[in-house]
Image 1: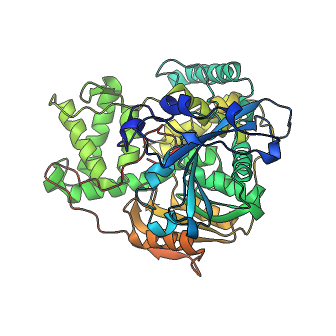
Image 2: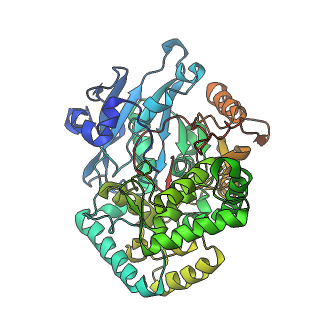
Image 3: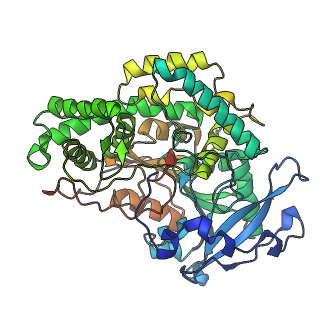
Length: 512
């Protein structure tokens, strides 16, 4: 996910990494036995409200081997606002893989209604390998090393293969047990946390990748799942290469929709009176940037980086149109507001790779990636060349256990926007089929990645709040309308009313 607006000065100064030393150490926690661990709560760090407490829970790196070394699970808590109404705990995961969730409840507390905050202790955590939870590393140091989705070119494919092979080897060398940093083991960590909190069951809110983590938990621990909300869903049958390649096919109709909208608002943006003119300007700028990167306020953008950024923005057409205006002006030599490109940290990259490569077996023959990239480049010109290209998973060791087959009747509420850059409706329907006790709240014409609490649809928000507060699922699936969007301004973009998102990596399946 892209770095968002910050929510507190303390988080702005470094979030998890900076605050990690203030967390209680694993040694400080009372831990008589793995099944009976307790948590020792303390302050989280300077600048954070006293209502936020932190603790560390040691968990085995390999749950199948109780004698394996332990790693830290960093946990936060905001106690229920009304102890008399307390029902239990509500865990959060903001997506990723690789997204920090330690202080996600602090952000969610700004938008959660009182009926929810009264009943639940809000529990955040950094998943294993992320942030303050024994972070994994691949030892990368350069921006190029961390470029995960590389545009396919015949002339550069051999170099891409070498990069993927070398990166996989570096990850194993720096984190020898990286094969155990998987979704299934994170779900086991969650259940250890449940026990340490003294709860018989947990409720849960998962966004994007967090929907898959939540679904895996329901499969592994069905009797311990209470009220589960899964926002912007991953299809368990498509993890992970199928989900990534799905971005290419879904981007094509989204791009056409954006071009039509931008042309219809030509009086505001002035980048084309017809969809064809808008499209031509965009691709002319991409081709120019591939030859000579376009300087966006001191930050050069290649054509590939322009496409990657636009893939997010065009799902909210006003944002995409404003970005095209900026590109046009920058290419003409006009001063523009700086737009720093996203560069992941080593931990962002390593934790993402660990999960997507370790959860499932990927194709291992480079020729397969070359053939898929050539085909998808022609089928899906906007992004097909990048998402089908080779990745380190081609050279990963075989997963330590089979992928989870999600197929159960645990009740859950799935919420989904129609126009979502990362988890399209087809993947939400896939999760809905796998979770046979679920209901789907679908926001027709809803835009953006993430629904609940983001000002997208009061209809959808009310359904989620009712479920968390009362346990009442809709009797059937629900279609909601989005709330009216603010009008575009003369400056080229509609005011952004989306609530500020906590900072963190722009993880592929993370909230923006």
